[in-house]
Amino acid sequence: MLKRKSIQVVFMFELRMSLQSLMVALVMVMVFLSPCPGMSAPQGEPDDEAFDVENYDLNSEDWENLDVNIYGDSYDYDDLDQEIEVGTIAPDTPSPASQSTAQHYEEEKTVPTLPPAPISLDFKGPGLFGPETGLGMPTCLLCVCIGGSVYCDDTGMDQIPPLPKDTTHFYGRFNKIRHVKNTDFLNLNKLQSIDLTGNQVSGMDEDVFRSLTQLQELLLADNNIQVLPELPVTMRRIDLRNNKLVNHGLHSEGFKEMSQLEFLYLSSNNLDYVPTPLPLSLRVLHLQDNNIQSLQEDTFCDRHDRNFIRRNLEDIRLDSNPLNINLFAQAYVCLPRLPVGSH
Image 1 (cartoon, rainbow, N blue to C red):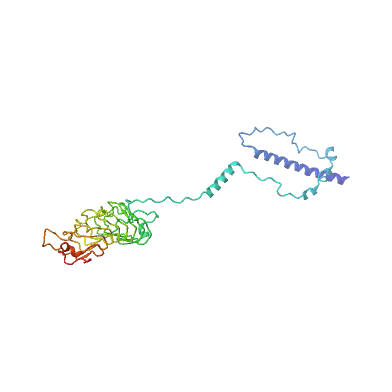
Image 2 (spheres, rainbow, N blue to C red):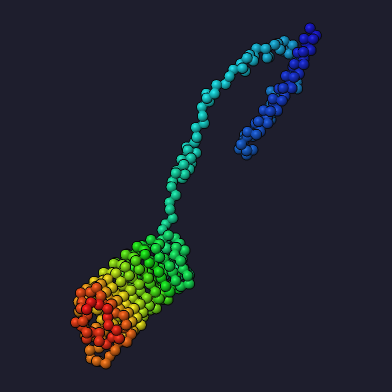
């Protein structure tokens, strides 16, 4: 009996200590859960009678009659062996705000990246290599620039690119250029030579060459030109072979003021007569394979001056024309050499 009572005393002591620990834990939880001291209810005096643990009498009849077997013996520990069924817990439902954010993120991922806006051409822009082309690169990276010469031969381009402002010679041969605009050579005050041989040029703006005060060579052979714009008087060489020129497509007396013109190539066109007057500086005139049928007395000579001699014009080609040159001897009597043609 004494042994049983000792066990009860020890058990009650442990229970007392557990109750004290529980009270301390409850007080701490209430302190931490309070939102802020200013908003919490005023703390009252603790009820010592309700929590007077130290005054409990372990030797009272209540403690002696306490059945320790009611603690622990009736608990079924086999319940701990029950397996937890996977998937029975409902998944967390995302809030509307997080759903909206995720949807916006997915939309941003699926929106295709737009290409950069095309670069507009600015023919008056500053810079050593001029403005940028439609490909976004300076012309001298697309073509070859050596000194003042720009070589864009056989590049497949269909328009003249913006050229460096110090360009003196431009070569755009064997491409697909159809039209030459008045902005193509704007502000190129040093330009001396333009070579567009072997393109598909069929039209040119009237004032495209007018501002080129240093232009000396214009090479437009093997194109589809019917009308020739006004040219500066500084020309020395003009090559219009194998085009579709007709006489009314040339300016009246368009070559007269070209005091430095030496080479004029007009073969394989649709000309009906020699475009006169011709400057005295002319050395070579090629008109073969046209539709010229007659010559005038003052075509090459001066009918008012029988002593006039045109010394510079040494090469005249009139072959492959419906023309008998023997019938128009007065037209070339002033020349140092006879023209080439049918007799």
